Amino acid sequence: MSFEIDVRKRLGDAEVALTLAAGDGATVLFGPSGVGKTSILKMVAGLLTPDQGRIVVDGVTLFGEGVNLPPEHRRAGYVFQEARLFPHLKVRANLLYGAGRDTSGFEERIGFLGIAHLLDRWPRSLSGGEAQRVAIGRALLSNPRFLLLDEPLASLDRPRREEIVRAIEHLRDAMRLPILMVTHDPDEAARIGTRVVRM
Amino acid sequence: MADGFVLTPAEWGIVGLSLRVGAVAMLITLPIAFGFAWLLARVRFPGRILVDAVIHLPLVVPPVVTGWLLLLAFAPNGPVGGWLQSWFGVSVLFRWTGAAIAAGVMALPLMVRAMRLSIEAVDARLESAARTLGAGPWRVFWTVTLPLSVPGVLAGAVLGFARSIGEFGATITFVSNVPGETQTLPLAIYSALQQPGAEMLVWRLSAISVALSLIALVASELLTRRAGRGLHVL
Image (cartoon, rainbow over all chains, first blue to last red; front, top):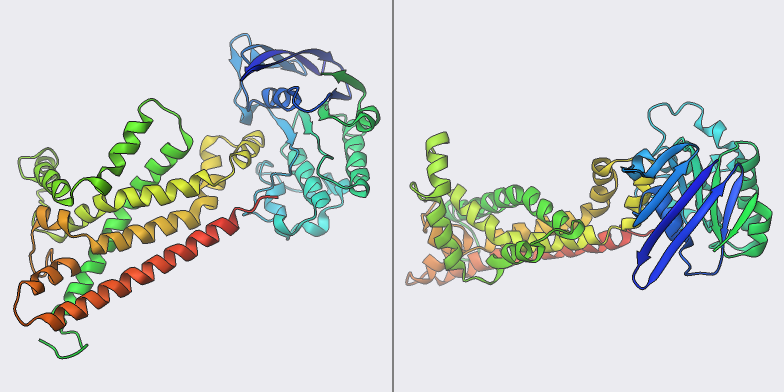
C-alpha cells in the first residue's frame, strides 16, 4: 500500500476524519472547500498532529503506535497551493534547498519542468506557472519518498494548468512516486487520479 | 570654551564617549533582544505574558528606579557585582561600561519590540515549507527566519543605539556623572545647564543630540520599509 491513513482531528467546531488505503499511482482527495482536505495533507507531512490514528506511507509509519516523525524526517515532497518559494533566495538556491550535498546533474533530473532558463531569477520575477513548476522541482530535488500536492493548479490560468498537469502525469507515470493530491475540481480529479476519494 | 559652533577637544570627547557607550550597549543587547523577540514571536509557553511585561518594564518604570536596581545588582556586594569582582576583578561602577549596561537595559524593550514585529512578519508558511524539505528547526531559523527578519533586526538595533545615546536617568543614578568616563551627551548637557554662562555649550551639544537621533530614526525607518518589501511572497 502507498498510503494507509486513518486519522481524526478536531479543529475548532469541525472534525476532520479520513480512513483510506491506497495503492500505486495518484490518489486524489476530492471535495468542496472546508472539509479538511488540506488538513489531511498537513497531517501526512507532519505539520499538523492528529488527535488519534495512524499514517503509514510505503510501509513506513510516520505517525501512530508511539511514533510521530518530525516533518524534516518524513521525506514528503510537499507542493503547496501557493508556491511558497523563499523570497530571499534565487531559483537555483530554492531548488537546491532540500537537495543535500550531492547536487550533480540536478538540472537533468528536473529537465521535464522546463525551468532551466529561470535558475538565476528571483522568485518575485516569476509568473504563477513558473513559480509553481519551481516549487515542484524543489520538492522533487529533496529526494521525497512520496508527493503531497495541494491544489497545485488553483492559482493558475487555463493554459498554464496544462503544463502543470503534464508535469504531474510525468511524476505519476515515469517517476512512479506515490502521490496524494487535493482538489475541488472534478476534471482535474478525473484526469490525474488513479483513484478518487470523496471527502 | 569654544565660540560658536566649533567643538573643543573635550566636547569631541563627550561625543566620542556617547557613541562608544551607545555602540557597546547596542551590541551587547542585540543578541539578548533578538533571543527574547524570537521567543515571544514564535514560542507559546506558560508565563509568556509575564516575560513580555518584565521586558517592557524599563520603558515605563521611572529610569531612576531602574538605575537604582542596577546599582544594587552591580554593587561590590550585589549579586552581579560580587560575581564580576571575584571572577574578573572588575567593577562597572563609575565606569563607561556601567553606562553602557544602563543604556542597554533601557534600550532592550524598544529593540525587542522592533525585532519581534519583524520576526512575526516572516511568513510561518515558508518555515513549514522548509521543514518539509528536510530542514530541522535550527536550519530553518538560520536559513529562513533570520535572513528574512534582518532588515527589521537592524532597524531595532539602530533604534536601540539612538535610545542608548539619549539615556539619562538610569545612567546618572547607576554610574554617576563622571567627566570623561560616564558623562555622555545628556549628562554633559545637564551639567552645562547648572553652570552659568554655558548656554552655547548646551546649544551645541543639544544640536548634536538632535542630529544623531534624527539620523538614527531615518535609518531605522528606511530599514523597516525595506523589511516590508523584502517579505514579498509569491
